[in-house]
Length: 177
Image (cartoon, rainbow, N blue to C red; front, side):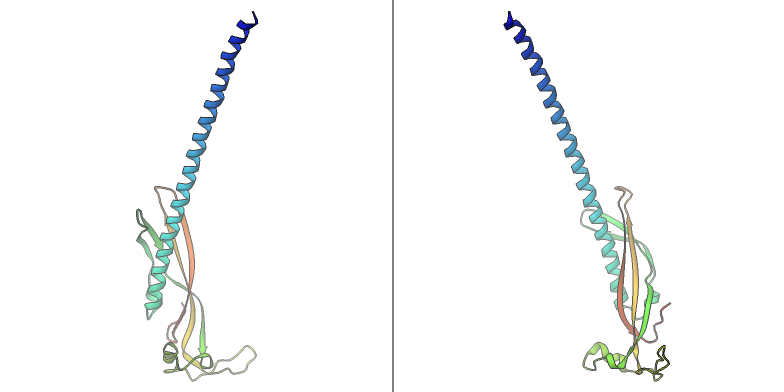
């Protein structure tokens, strides 16, 4: 008689084990899908960041090549390809945040980049906050310019914005707006 009771229990225990195994498999599949979505979002964010960085580097290259940086305008629709996807980056116009005259005692006449600073130098000396005269300024200024680029991808929802500075030595006639 005890054998009949045990054979019914085996079926119940087997069904419970099947349910537990099914729940474990379903949870593993869900966690796998969530991990896949997280990895996809991280990849999209990295691509958007790379696109914004390329847009900034393009503008910094234009700054380095331009005789008048203030004429470089904003580019709100710059198409940047990262391989499989093309993102649209919005690049601001460069903004000057700092400018200081280069003194002649910091220049090296042997360097080609510094030689232009000796041509047509300003004869007026600078005055310090204490009222003393400094060395004669050269025909160059050191300026710091900032560029901002952003990428907003409507398909993935990725949004990235970066700010980068560029130090440039320019002629004394280039003013910091």
